[in-house]
Amino acid sequence: METQLNSIKTAVYIVGAGPGDPDLLTVKAQKLLSTADVILFADALVPEQILNLCRQDAEIIPSADKTLEEIVALMLERVRSHKSIVRLHSGDPSLYSAVHEQMQMLAEANIPFEVVPGISAFQAAAAKLKVELTVPGLVQTIILTRISGRTEVPPTEELASLAAHQASLCLYLSARHVENAQTKLSEHYSDETPVAICFRLGWPDEKIRVVPLKQMAECTHQENLIRTTLYVISPALLPTNGRSHLYNPEYQHLFRA
Image (tube, rainbow, N blue to C red; front, side):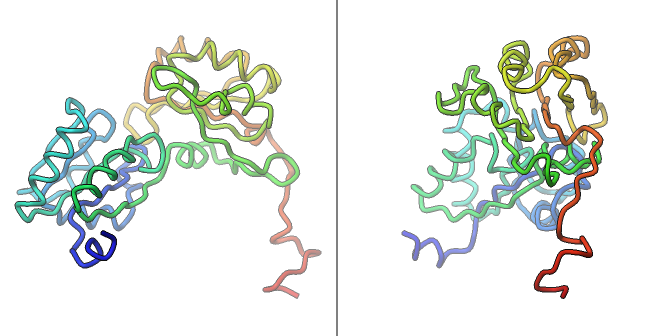
């Protein structure tokens, strides 16, 4: 089947729209949006301003009220009508985008597709906070995860066990369970560990609050945050003098004697 797919022009582009700011779209995403016949977009999570980049005569189809089967059926019908399709997801398709099953069904139908990455919320959060999440001598690991809810997390990825690493931990899709999350995080992070609470990054109503871990749930409730919220828990949010070897004058490497 791989040879067959490679011989056919790509018909479906699964595109990451980034966290919300249209200016954070990749150049490739902008080009695809400006030329596609059909835009099938996750309207609950992708700002309508991004659709301003589309052709005026493009067919725009929201998907928030549709099932997987309905979404894929739409794509198959449009492809068989010789139309190019952008399936527009929020953030990056590799994270919490429900894209795996869409790709499986497209492959089973012999429909060629390509995935175009986008900026994820954790990257936008670090940029807004003006921090590097990997600081030499302090933290060198980033964990992207969520807490169990309607979608269960495997037992080996339970939040408290991940918190034991005391890495830069980016917690998605967890605002509705923030008390439980705070309790589990507190097993390994100190109560004074800074937490950045990031709501709708890149949207006009964006909010970012940095509080000690012990105030994580309280602040979430005060701000009435129940969805589209990312938590960044990290020692890198504290002032630090950590320095890498890369630009250190005493460090030799391939490009500098």
